[in-house]
Image (cartoon, rainbow, N blue to C red; front, top):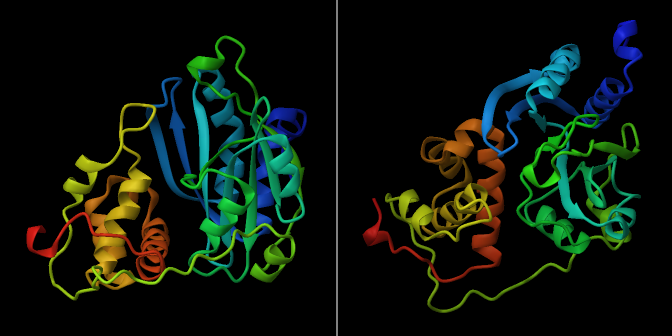
Length: 290
């Protein structure tokens, strides 16, 4: 892919384009682009940008981001492989993932993020990989663009730049390879307790009750990713299919509406697997649901 001389001469923009092309090399063909301010509040959003469109607009987006102290965050989407984000890694953990990762970012000093593309991923593998790598189990699946500043209040006034530490074009692995690299935590096989009974009902859990009962995070708000997962798991335990849950989640969750159908399907799939293999007592009973 050819770029203008101005782009080619700007190492920060070149770093951003290299990151996008690494994602493209493992199957990512669409990108949701989010802009946030220094307080972490969303200030802009572009859904479903093609790789070509993202590359074409990146130089101007980065220039505007620096003028306004904005973060540029991308969520890659792929239909051909599963892209797994391993977030909040120290240097040692990042090094352990290097044989599996197609991209390793340093998002702030000594804070790393690895991305792994898996060709034959099945429900449960993402959680096992994150646990095995010692990564954040609730990673969002979105990354700051390499070459951009990490605008957070705690870093002011010397905002660090996101840097690509390793990249392997087209590097896609299998579940068997992850197992050989000893990156997968053991699968948890839990016998379903007697008081857990999967039921079939036309009713749905109350999303608002899940939201009200969710623990509050560092920013004073519950994690929408966790709320979505819990709600989906309850719905699965009530007998709803992955397809039904994903469709309903799109109507219930603002995060699902923002991130698109693939996020809803992925969340519903993980939750349905968890409901079957890692059941726990339901926090809502069907008779109390809407």
